[in-house]
Image (cartoon, rainbow, N blue to C red; front, top):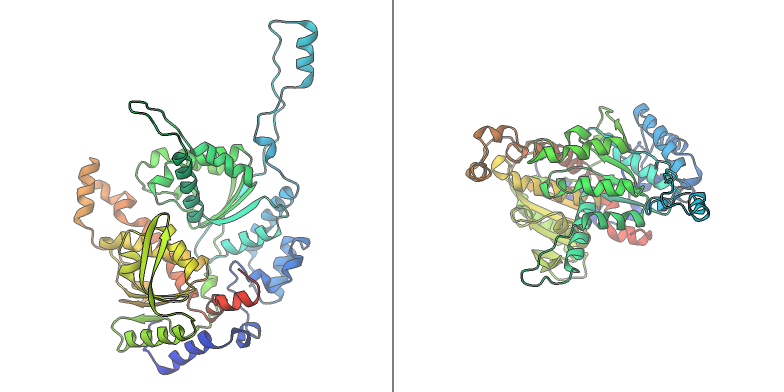
Length: 483
């Protein structure tokens, strides 16, 4: 992955980047393409998707060499197909208000005039369909299966969202509700909990939520999930989620995890748990690279090659090379070197300052190609930066943003579990924890960062493929009428 920079590799990359994508080999490739993520079910006639049974659609994709047959994946589809059928005529509106008492009870009270009438229990509502929580190793096909299922569900009240984006939306809704409260007078205090009303809003908008990359690493998220999902499940929302973590490992070794454990029990009660462990990372199979997209800092001329590539891409833009200021929830994020939909950034610029998923989401919306220079080897001393880098790549990958990386080490050696800084030891003292806590709490061990980084490596490998780069060309997507 870090072979020496050559004119041939550079020329191949330019051919992929600059030629008219309609003339590329995307539609004429003869070898099977097993990297089927998100949109690749369009190999078939997407307009006819709902009329084709889910497993039959999967089999067709296998026959057309869009997929490799995988018995585990097909077994999961069989279960998802049953849920698809249950959701066809499903509405969760019945769960938004408590059921009324039987009519004959009220009539009995009127005719007898009884002061103490016998109370009858309301007719119980049928339970909503049970969802699915699908977990397994990176590249095993979890997202593909969920997206295939989602495309077949014939119900307009459905939403598919990355879990990070969902939680960002939750915090925005909570903030808006708090801002709408009347101003408190001096000496007057009252409490208001907006979590349940926010969840009820979502329950009124959708009856199916499909989450990609369900993960919990933020204590602020961990503390509200139980109440949030209790209300969602109570209002009949069906949840289908993918994750690299088993349910019992969510928020593993996190701060105040005892208060989070009831959420795990609730999740398992309302969702079937499926482990999809194919033993294969389909993202890495039969990859035709787009050219050289990952450079080592110490390679002779690597910086000059990135400069040349940026200049070539800039020529295709109808813009000047200028700094760009993005507005994110009232804050400003400045990128020093941009040209149209291309941004030339450093690791320090993107991950060395306190940016979060909302910032990276806005960058992904604004740019289709991002250079990331001077990525260091990340140790425990840089675990905050490593976490941001993982979130950055997650957002870029989910929106097909193309990246060119210049790093201090080969991809598989970018994160190593060594080091640890004085700030962690001071935090232990502030929290009143013993020195042994740094061996168990993920806040100090960087266990979550290391676990998430395996997904980052797999995604960065796929992001270097020709297919990914062609699909990431937003000019090409606009020609085809895709968003």
